Amino acid sequence: MLLLFLAYLNFISGLKQTLKIDEMTSGVASKLNTAKDFVQHQQQTLSELGAVKTVKERVGSLMPTQLQNLKLNYFSPGSWTKYFPAAKGNRQSPIDICASQAQFDEQLENRIKLTLTLALSAVHLPATYILTQIHCHWGTEPMNGSEHVIGGVGYAGEIHIVHRNANYSTMEEACKHSDGVAVVAVFLNESLDDNLALEPLVQMISKIQFKNESVTFPQGFDIKCLIPDKINLDKREFWTYEGSLTTPPCCECVLWTVFRAAIPISSRQLEVFRSLYAVPVEDSERNPMRLINNIRPVQAVNSRIVRASFRAGGLCTT
Image (spheres, helix red, strand yellow):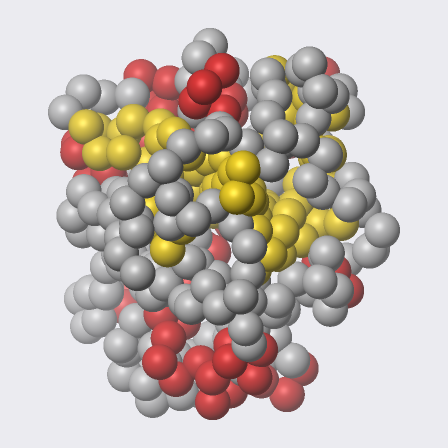
């Protein structure tokens, strides 16, 4: 998951005052000074997800202390429940969103404006949420790289914009509460033409081939390119449901907002992401593990209700 500390955009209210935004100060661009964490988080995730011989590094700072230095011979999603009890819960993520069964909620229907911000608030969220990280998932094919799927159909990738409930001082504390985290998910749709707005990001990532490498981000990078078309309001339609983190410890602490529309990214641009290595350069010859398919299989919806901000039917695989 490509982790970077950058300020995020979010929604404010239209006719029904659905989404409110705290304005970000003009100095936010200066915070976009490195892509190191952006890539390293992805590399950590692959170690967690992939069928690798040895996981040499800490499992992750959000995991229980006794597990942070755990070494495993085989660490795949199927084994998570053995080490992380929350992964066996009833509100796990991602899920297959069945559009025909999602419940329209007129309170969510809105006209959305977007701007740069450090804080996220919305009518369907119980508090203000502070941007914590942005990361990405991708696969090897146009329809196998997203974690969430719609009626059984996936996308080439999925961006997660992660926020912590402002009532909790740390992400670790937030993960202990059912309303602790709010994640905005945006699908990546593989296309023939380059997305020029994403090109500065792609160029930066192309300079980071191996783990522990870093590069400085251009201050002019427009992070609004990470959301659907800011002109067409119907592309702001979304689903929301109660779920979990999609990587260990899989805490059931996430309020998900999943955009219906996707943003385009060309096959060439995706190959830059797919070419990343999950290991340092000194280990690449011995263990040339690529950073791909960092996705968790869909989980059971169980009795959860998925709400939609729009009226629409759709296919469902169940």
